[in-house]
Image (cartoon, rainbow, N blue to C red; front, side, top):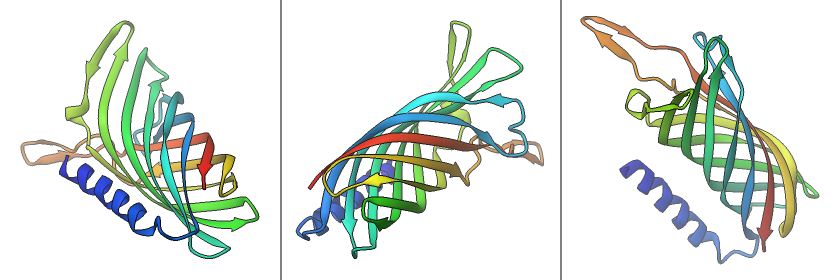
Amino acid sequence: MKKLLFSLSLLVGSVSAVQAQSDVSLGLKVGGTLSSYAGKQATNDKSLVGFHGGGFANIGLTDLFAFQPEIIYSQKGAKSSSSDLTTRLSYLDVPLAFHVNADGLFFEAGPQVGFLLAAQNKTGNTSTDVKSLLNTVDFGYLFGLGYQRKSGLGIGLRYNGGFTNIPKAVTTGSVTVQDNIRNSAFQLYLTYSFY
């Protein structure tokens, strides 16, 4: 929780510090997520459709480059292809995207940290809270492209992947087992920028 508050404070402080600059626009984004898992033990999973939405500050550094910190609620997870099990993970993601702009068209890449808010396994009509079995911080990366002006509507497509394994390591006696399962998500979204 302290890490989450620190990240939010850092983002708000960064936005407040640069808001006096003339090349800063705030905005909202919302869209769909198609997520699954990546890694050696993620072989029997199907994609799961989810939702994401939140806010951003686009900070123009030059005519060509911009920095865009965001705070995004994001649903991730996957369906098992061998059973009726669906895992839904809810994150508060804090992407730090660096944009290369070309007259509205942009390409983006950067790091991302996600804070696990909730985790549910669902089989039939039965849901089970599994948050205690999972790592609560997910370090990852993003890259994408889109079209976004300093004000008005925009559209984008982004991939974000995790470096952190989703399940916690399990130790039994002197043996520790760590499953190699990470988040993998495509996000298609609309934005609205206020200049």
